[in-house]
Image (cartoon, rainbow, N blue to C red; front, side, top):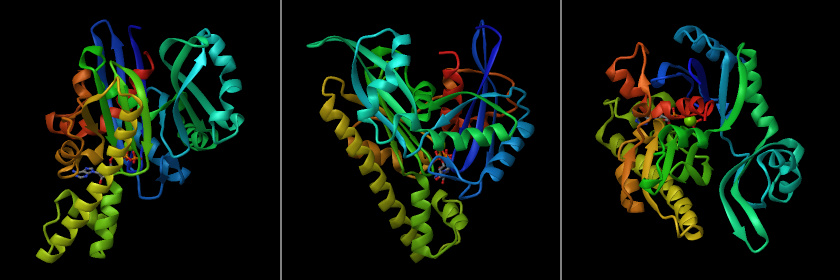
Length: 348
Ligand SMILES: Nc1ncnc2c1ncn2[C@@H]1O[C@H](COP(=O)(O)OP(=O)(O)OP(=O)(O)O)[C@@H](O)[C@H]1O
Ligand SMILES: [Mg+2]
């Protein structure tokens, strides 16, 4: 689709972020990237709580970063998103669209009328009951999606699609070719982390974890009895004013929370491995601000015994005149996976 632009918008706990891509003859170009920080509590576990604050941040983002496109692809990831593997009788894609709500009620913890539904076909099978479609059923509670959509609209933008953040991570950092086997992608946020396992771009397993870097900050704040901002600086290693005792307390809190988080990831990987022995995970790619936590990648590698690497979302696109220098580009790399992946979804 030459000449077309697409904007992906990620509403995260720590900030709103957008990426604009253009699609031309010579490939996909990152034209713009911008972000505006959000105060604690404006977004909770993936849901907009303080509409006014988020609307202001979105307006500031559009103005400050010079986005002209008003149509956006929005990401959604919260505790009321259900993703599960499901086999359905074979049908055409348009039949699927119509009959999905009728087929899936028994698999949902909510009324089908209250859910936004999607089905990603991963395989066509010949089962005992004939031809079948195997895929991932995605269901998100409508009201949680709507509070985010409403905030975006109130900022003067138009939501043209809503996509599971996990699928954005897949497009943003996953290797699309099947010759690399099966890999796990882990986007670690502040409160929400997305784990996606795929083979050559085909998703096999998705889990939204309600944990991330903020748990580490909270633990440090509690252990030291300091405000969140200071705990955050301690976590990032940018505050050096601690006594040796305080430093030790902070380090042990960090290590403990890192372990808890990695254990949670490991148990999801184990669960996946037990039910998909034919597609073992060969490696893990991390993204998200939380992936910058000191020691997280080596620890993950040690516990899972799989190579852990950093997702290279910017390596996937050409770089336009973003106005960002090399250091800034390196700094946004982990944060760009979701918004870039959302924008990539507009044409795929
Ligand atoms: N240099 C760093 N060292 C350690 N942690 C960091 C660093 N930079 C950012 N983080 C952590 O990354 C987390 C934020 O990550 P990210 O921006 O991907 O989350 P988000 O998308 O805003 O939130 P969520 O996806 O949970 O809604 C925070 O917990 C922050 O403390
Ligand atoms: Mg996030």
